[in-house]
Amino acid sequence: MAETDWLRGTSPAFRLVIATSWLAPESWQKNQEAAICQAIEAGPDWTEYLSLVDRHRTPALSWAALKRVPGLTIPESARKGLQERSDGCRLQAVRHSLIQAGILKAFDCAGIPAITLKGTILSLDLYGDLGLRQSNDLDLVVIPDDIDRAQACLESMGWRLDSTYFPMTPRQMEILRQAEHHLGFVHMERGGVLELHWRNHWDMPDDHASVWARRVVTVWQGYSYQVLNPIDLVLYLCGHGGHHAWFRAKWLGDMARIHTQGRLDWEAVFEHARSTGQERPLLACLKLLNIVHGLPLPDLRGNPWKNLPSFLVKSPLRALKASKDPMAHGNLELLPQPRRLRLFRYGRLALPRRTWREHLSELTYCRDDFRVLRLPDSLIWAYAPLHPILWAWTRLGRIWSRLWRTGSLASPQSQ
Image 1 (cartoon, rainbow, N blue to C red):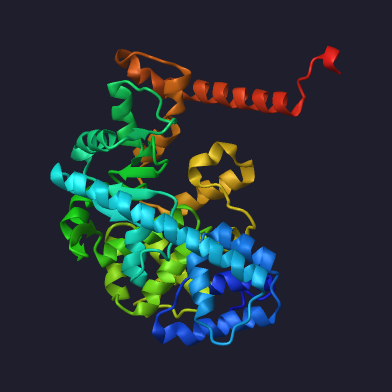
Image 2 (tube, rainbow, N blue to C red):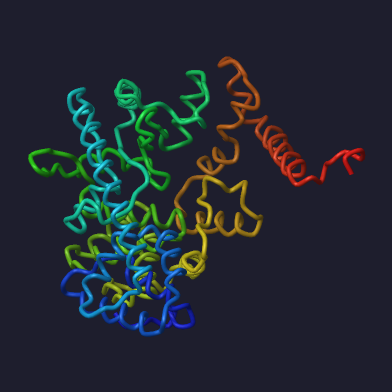
């Protein structure tokens, strides 16, 4: 895993966080250790490194990767800071696993099938260790018909919809479920965060049933749970990372681990991705692994990368180098116009098979419309034509509030 051309010219601390953003399997361990040693020999700024570890959310992974390198010397302050971060990550993973086990047990008793996403279960699957991947929330998927029962079950355990889900009418909730893909919950006592999904933003409409049919039931310490099958998992991770333009190194690290484990037939993965319209996120991910980690491109027939839009690779490479978290797609209105346009273009290129109706629904739906104008369910149809007006009203309100906070609208008397 020699230093790639893309990494040359970046800071030693950045090169080190890329090298330690995953834990290579034994077959690639020497390559990873060489990359780590090369970055450390260049003299990283350890304060910058710890900041980047926080930025890319790799504390336990980075600490585990560094500890495997024989004879490595780390400054005491950096060693202590990273170990504390790793311990905190592992403690959080224990809490998450206990909470998740309780939820899955309650769902099982209620006859509600659920699939786990990311988090501690993915950490266990990829590394055989629940605590290596940092995650700040829990993610579960249920079938759309079980949303109401799943919500009631969660509420009986102390979970409540977060504050962004203000009281909504039945028709408003129906529209939300058609336009969005998950509900966000917080626990009133534990303070945990959970997302209850019924689909993903990049899903093909007709693929839900087949994904559920392919799910895998597995057992850990006598407890059974359900996960995506290996191909669906890879495409989910590519879709999730691609949806956020891969701005965190840990997401690419997950895929690097999968790639180097050699447990997938990439030709079969690509054929399935092409059948479901997910080939571009997959190809972009594999190209990024080649550029960022120096991993070989799979030998796919016809060299499909020749038709991959370069923007799907260049944009994530730019996002990875950002010193702070770029905002995710859900906060487009808070972003500068150029970045908003880049993210919109990225989404259009990554998900080319979306219909014009799906794009139109995104332009005519915003959950905040229900808050700005409270219409009865009999007039629910009016939100779509009123959306541009409500958007402008909300936008002007934000601008006014920002100007007021900065003092630009101070009264003459106060000046």
